[in-house]
Amino acid sequence: MPRLLRLALLMLSAMAVPTTAAPAIGSANDSYQIIHAFPHDPQAFTQGLIYVDGHLYESTGLNGRSSLRMVNLSTGEVLQRYNLPAEYFGEGLTEWGSELIQLTWKAHKAFVYDRFRFSLLKTFQYEGEGWGLTHDSKQLIMSDGTAYLRFLDPNSFRVTRRVRVVDETGHSLDNLNELEYIHGEIYANVWQTDEIARISPRTGKVLGRIDLGSLIDKRGLDPGAVLNGIAYDSAADRLFVTGKLWPKLFEIKVATR
Image (cartoon, rainbow, N blue to C red; front, side, top):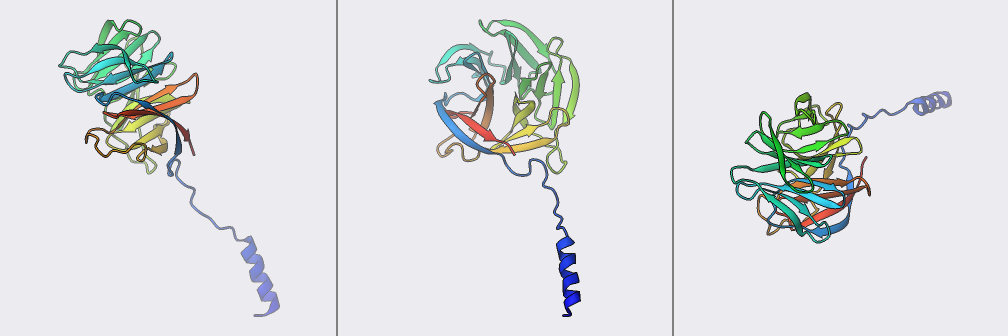
């Protein structure tokens, strides 16, 4: 090859910049680290989980076994308990000020309790099923098993808007279950999977996923013992996760991408 031609080809090669498609947001799973494992009632069919003022509060499901609980994090001991009537299947749970709000699955009814006495203050109705519940600083956020999240006025419980959750490919992501609002994002258990999806409350886009498939050894566990339960200690920046009928509850640290 003539010297001048070879130099020209080398110059063109140096100028060429390889192009690669940018990865989709959240296309890779977020990594996590187990900080601590705590005991958890293996009979608790966990549906909702929150952490407030040094205690866990838990909503459990199944007809005839549904309850609202205050739990000692370190020991798993149930410190306070309210049993729902047998016709109700307990679901998502969140706090709003001095109140606790608990959904039910198919009864279209939510219960509002005094957080300190567990006394029932009022109820409200909603359409469809009740699955997960959380809140930001202004409104309640509810899942119903579909790809849509509802935003509710915490005083009137009126739906103010809905957002469709879409995955990294633009498809709807349904089976959104237990919810927690963390650092401006909605963390959602995806029912019957080992994943928590991190969701933008503004756009509904999935920002990342946390794969917790290796978190617990499921050998010997009930087939219904799926991941479900997210609680956040905002004061100490601690994240807790568990599952239905799990004997353990975990504090984990997530490294988001």
